[in-house]
Amino acid sequence: MAVKINPNRAAIAVGDALIVVDVQNDFLPGGALAVPAGDDVIEPLNRAIEAFERARLPVYYSRDWHPPNHCSFKAQGGPWPPHCIAKSDGAAFASKLRLLEDAAVISKATTAEVDAYSAFQGTTLAAQLTAGRVRRVFVGGLATDYCVRATVLDARKHGFEVELLGDAVRAVEVEAGDGRRALEEMLQQGAHLIASPTVTG
Ligand code: VGL
Ligand code: ZN
Image (cartoon, rainbow, N blue to C red; front, side, top):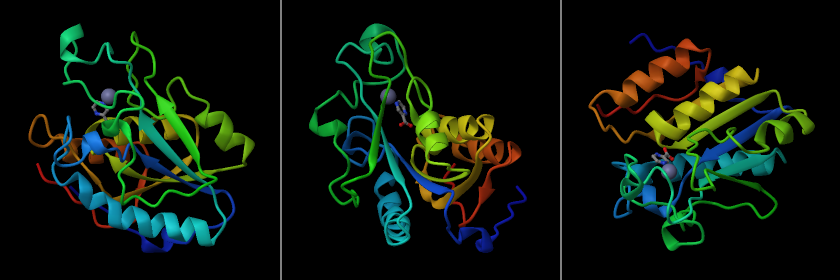
């Protein structure tokens, strides 16, 4: 894969926002739906969060926030073990993740009938970004091949520029290569990569 990294794009300014995707206990090692090395995203994300904090630019934290009978769970015929049940410890943000007090939290897939990988799906994220005159989003978190992928592709569909924090994403890899394929798809759709990607499969 020919990957172009342009570190100059990492300079942040008014019009930029950071989206931290699903850095929740259930997606970390030991969690109900653990992403391999999922906790590796925390350090680079904390650095990005601090940079946005210093620049007084907005940070959005998305979270998977399912009811106990969610359609994506195996008992309901879905592909996943129960995970990120609203208000459970597993759904809480990782304790080491830097949480800004005035940051917006975007809960998704909150009803039993609908799953949503994208932080834009069924939420007010696009409206909030537009209201804040955001034109470009920086994205990192979990998992590369599911919620990061869907969020980045939706951000592009909504017309936002996207900078993917390549060192701050990790993949589930249900099939080996899923992370790499997701990365290629995001770049194909116009996302830029501003740090070396970590792909496992
Ligand atoms: C996710 C699988 C199921 C994710 C959420 O956050 O990437 N993956 N639910
Ligand atoms: Zn989920």
